[in-house]
Every structure is written in structure tokens, then in C-alpha cells.
Length: 181
Image 1 (cartoon, rainbow, N blue to C red):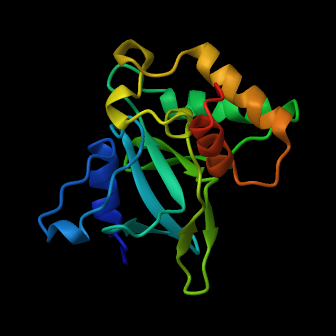
Image 2: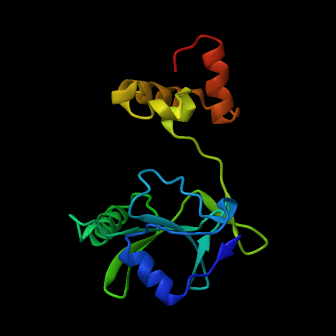
Image 3: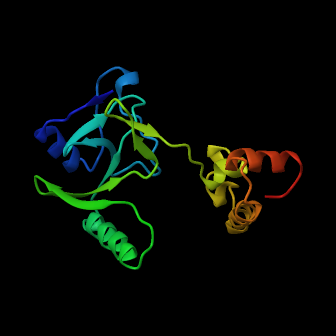
């Protein structure tokens, strides 16, 4: 489910730079699966209103807040994203926002589509670690995760295969056959 924060709660959330404090049952707390979840907050945005995504309810946007050492980060991210769009690169929709003196960027999540109930549905997506079979404990190269060459070979394999087999099935099949991805 989703819960609409009041303007005051939203202002306090922005002042805390996205850190969510809830005292409710664990299955009703927002699920933070965002990379580097500090200073970000998942929200469902519907008809210009914010709804805190509770439990496993998908969000439609990420609110990205200022950092103590980088107060202009939301403006910088908005500027660079719009600059990329100006040279015809595919980018997410992003808007600068401000509430009670705190600035943040409202970023539409690309891996979501609206459902019939007015909520959002997650689209399946995999990062390089998942596609290459690395566990979350090996997410970064310094901890035994994939390096640039691993990622390049996977991207090349996917591009060259042009198969109708879904990406994860194709990579899994090739790995089982002993083909280096």
C-alpha cells in the first residue's frame, strides 16, 4: 500500500535528507532497495501528490536530496540529465523541487509502469552482477565482483546473440554450457 505524507511530514523528510523513520509494523515500512539508499526516498507520485510506498509497494519516483557536503547535488543532477537530453541521449524524467527550504530532485523511475489500480508495477531488470551470477556480497569489483572486461563481454554477448530468449535465460543457459559471458 501507499500512505500520503502531510506537507509537514514531507518537509521533515526533506530536512532529514530522505531518511525515513517509521514505527509501524515491519511489513508496512518502506522497502529501501535503492543503491546507496542514503539521501534518497522512494515515492509514488500520483496527481501531483506524494505517497510513501509502504512494504513492498512499488514507487514511481525517487526523491534525491541534498548531501551535507554537496548541497547543490539535486540541481547538478537535474542539469546534467537535461544536458544529456539536449544531445538526444535517452534519460529519465527529472524535476527540481523545493519544500521548506530543502531542495531535492524528483526522478521518474524507468523500471515502473502504471497498473489498473492506480499504483505501479515493477518491470523485471537485472544489473551486471545479477546477469553474471554474482551475489550481493560481491557487488563491487574490490570485493570480487565483475570488472569492466566482464561487463563488456556480457554486453557484447547480449548484443551479438540477438536471440529471442530472454536475457537472463540466455545468459544462464550459456553459463551452464561453459560459454564465458
